[in-house]
Length: 312
Image 1 (cartoon, one colour):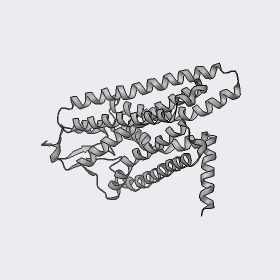
Image 2 (cartoon, helix red, strand yellow):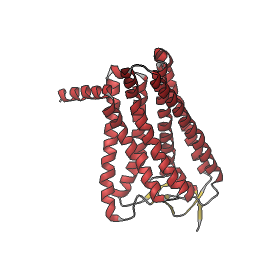
Image 3 (cartoon, one colour):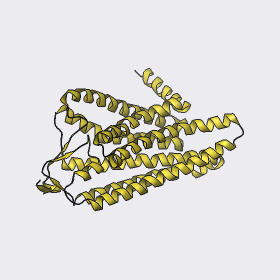
């Protein structure tokens, strides 16, 4: 097949979730609904946190950042898919594909780092309660989030710079509903050794290290909970940690499913289904996990909705 330099490739073809035209209206309605719920739910959570002074603490500062990242992450993938379904076109320009690769990598990495930072926050709050406000001061919290953005922006940029040297066929099909980095590398005609190696190294460093940090924080939290003599105190500490625990299991469970589907079974269908979970379902569920399990958030949402209703 004729190969072309990246600058000559005007369009890539995203196969999507299914090639059957009968399923396209169903997919459009389903993903549009989930996208709207994701955006509105996370925006509502951000507004509730920012408008309620009781929630101006590190835990909710990180949660609002996570909600913002989830909105951005979903907006990177779903609108493009909806436009392709509506226009009955599977094409995406090469520049759009690179842009999608950059931002999807950056945002999924930010999710990863923010969950780690939130685990550290819960570790300090439960194990070092008396020093909590000193350790988790506003300057330090802002610095942690800034460092996360800088690391993921640079890592995603390196991926894009390495992809500049790849070549693709004139008509390149990507067996996915968005330009996922691993799938784009598989579709390239040229040698992808350097890009693939960096992908594995980045995944190991930016994936394994945060997971290790989460596991360490969790081990310390569990040890601290078991040493508490008060049942009420133990329940209160667990209630603030339980929501984060659910989010971690949901996020890393879907990430593991994607890895197993693409790297072990080589099933593109399984990989697409798993990708739907972490690109759409997980960001959609995060606000509900925190609002349903957290009394403070429920009260803040209630006050926000009451003010909104009284203003009508």
